[in-house]
Amino acid sequence: MVLALFHGIFAIWFWQGKQLLPFMRVSVITRLLLVCVYWVSAMQAHSSGRDLNLPVSLVDIYIVYLVMQGAIDFIGSMTTAVLLRKNEIPSSRTPIKPVISELNLEVKNRFLFALYMVAIGAWMLSSTDGFLSFFHLPESEFTGWSVNSKSSVPGPIHLTGILIIVLALYNFVAVRYRLVELITAGVRGGLFTSLFVLLLVTSGMLHPITLLLPAVDLISVGAILFIRLKKVLKQ
Image 1: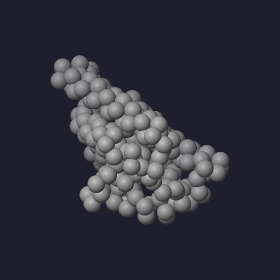
Image 2: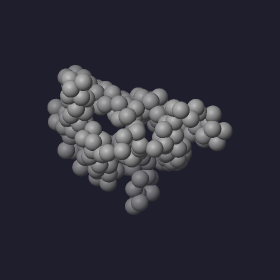
Image 3: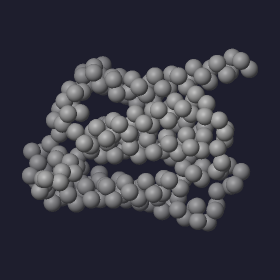
Image 4: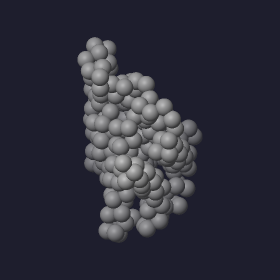
């Protein structure tokens, strides 16, 4: 469900940034890296997944997901690369220079939130068991990318950590080029994430402490909306 959430968030970002050259360029590279992550994970799950304490059918479904998602990102990356090479995107709608030169509070807000996402993603990858324990989440049957383990099988929690770091990189791009469209995409994604986690908590699927995860995002989004509201009232 969390992976589905992030695919939805990425869909918002790709839609908002489909004609922004800085974002398109970095998305080609990051999506190719994600292709490697998905397909390598699929191979590891295929070779060592039978050692997991999980139904074989569930492991097979997970492998199919990894292969298909890798293929989708590969096609998307190649399509974007072709468009960039042929320069078929209207130049009037592809800002390369920052839209606004100064680092206003809205931009700084996104920068700080991107740093927060990097920290969360690194925590999930470097200390998966500690992360899951802190937020009262069930232990993962997947070993992750363990150097000392012969059966190294990354699971959904490890993929989520990678996606969080990639999303942080997209936020850095939005900050670097002051891409208002992507900052808006971040606001929408933040509201979507907060609502998603709140629904899972109220349904009893997650411990209330997990609300701490989207709390920072919600505060960040609230600050941005407040800044924009003040600008509208001044006008």
